[in-house]
Length: 411
Image (cartoon, rainbow, N blue to C red; front, side, top):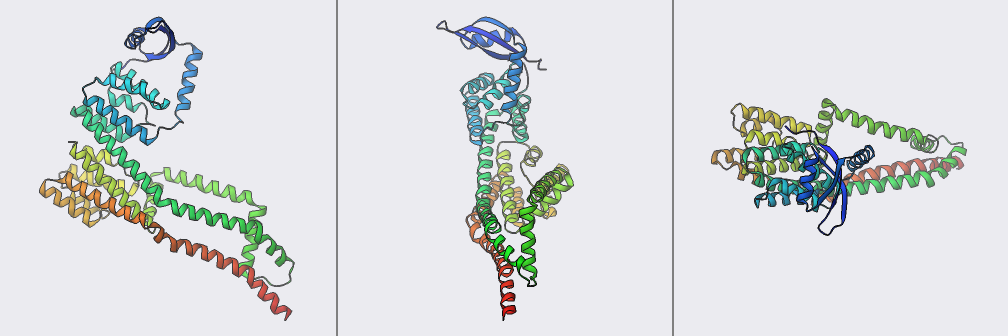
């Protein structure tokens, strides 16, 4: 059982006689002394940190929580740790070396804390779990598998592969949504310019006329009044909608309903399903290849899939597998997994090559998702043109119908 860690301040001399000072966390001053000796430093003073030093350290750690560690940095760290462990270097030395060499202060501080926790007798997975903002549940679960199986280096290499795959998946999603976001933003800006500079001139002209205004024009005048005189209500309404969405999404039933709708969104629903199925299959394959038991694989994979509907179905499949059924049977019964995927899983089970078949399934869905992303512009353009065309038609009717009415009155 790990002891309480205390923050100590120290002053020491290096080999050249220069004085060094700093802070270090340990369970006792002897732990600090041993650490300084390993660093090649001669301790002069070791004492418990003052109230102000502890407060400053807590403030720095609090600020560090809001600083980011890039995905690339996590991938590099995981590969480096796997390489060092594979080389036979003691785990504690690996952690301390990586903490000292890390250029990211947040990651370096976390690794120093992890090293101190392990040095005091704590489990590696428990030490990493102390930093949930950096290491998610999948990372912790895989570390536990590595500890139990004695294949920590292999598991860490697999973890690096998974992190790399997840980074590529996020880039795919960003690429898929970039064009619609830019196009949508352009439409909003164009509408805002028209509503700010063009529409008010026509509105003032129509307001002075004695002609009965058609419905599109009355709607346009109403929108103009709303945006110019009650703009704060629009802002409050948008903020309220965002907050309501977040609140509903935190509820299990709300998240399930929203995620179900996401899967039904034209084009994007199919794309996100392909990406999730590809991610599910890739991680499943990598973990099975690493010798992780299938039920443990399910426990890890379910935390990777983002959609609540798919998570629920994966949990159902896992429960049926735990009862002794083949993987393909509950997958077929769920109705959410594509028929081709179920058939390939069944073939993999029969041939005893499920891990390899899962890799082929992942390749298929990755290829499909890349194809959809590549052709996203072609698929989205008709929808964007429909939205823009509808607004232009509405604006044209709102402006020109009163002109035609006035011309008929003059005649």
